[in-house]
Image (cartoon, rainbow, N blue to C red; front, side):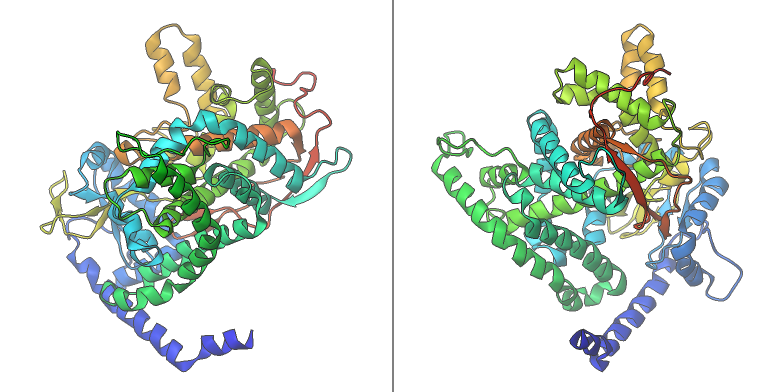
Length: 550
């Protein structure tokens, strides 16, 4: 501790951080002078340095600014500029220009450039990691096409982890921290799908992967926000050292496994140029690490064949899957538990009743087809994604051409500026969602049931569009179009299984009121300190009398 304290107050460190901060402020303070004057700002007051001060106020008033811009400009078909605490203001388009945004090619508006900038991937990960979108293609293929094969292992890990964390006491109620419990369950379940047994149950490895993912997020933020672009090549690698440290420690577990699997694949190259494991008594692992390894060795490029690059790709996917899935399930449970009412009218009881019937009809075995029928669980989570949108801004794209681009409304936006949509405001538009500021857990499943009850293919197709994984111009937590989150199908299955297994195996006491979220800029994060009371059900899948009647 004394060493850390001396390091923090060391004069050279203070000077370095001070210089970097002042330089960043000076660079960023003038950057927005290149934005079109014809696009209005929100959050500005009549005061000295009004735009700079609006950027600083956005730290606490981000969502308020977005609501102001949406009400004042978006509904009239106009774009607006929102301040940003990072001192990089962004242009948000009105819903009338959503189609135009999603139709733009990557060499005009780049989603990848935004992702690289957000995490500062050139510094926190090996540079080759993001040169080819292996992590995206693997998520699209392995975490979607293999969902059926992954279901059994996901359920097995969910049940085992719940028993260990929530307990098996059927007599007494147990108090657990909701966020910590869900994080542990999500991490173990993800690890089972990502690296398989036995590594997914190694507590040291799990701790390291979480610390690594946090280091990527925090170091990436610091590099992006505090360090100007001209100084990133100097300071970026320094601030990314924690990422390198955790990568090295994780690689001590992963590299031997990758080398072993790679050696086997090299021995079994087929005439078509594909690699598979050699025939042996051991089954081929069905986990994300295996699919990444197979993909890189099947690629014409040999840049990604390094075990360290394969490990970095896994870290990128783990970073996304851990945090987004954890936050989503905590938000959903807080929303559900704060709408709790004792007896069969509780939303959790409806979800339990549906899950019990579905599980019974599939011989008490979860399959992808069975999970797809969990319409109430799906609706409750989808509604939470709408109601408690984690990011007020979304679908961000970076202007790529050196000459800039021209918006449909005629304004020219210079290279490097970010353009996106006011997602949270769209999700709370009364013209799109009746009672937009109320959490209605079965908003989508009720409508789905109505449509499915009507005969005809078009109605059935329309009902399927109400699923959690179906994106649209009005439902954007996973973005939309060709850059929609490729891992959303895996995430949806895990979230629904987690919720279904939780209510089937445990009773959970409701909350008197919804705990307030932590709001930073446009981000909404659930509070960490919320405890809930749980008790193991004596017969996990037994329906109580009167349950499920609506």
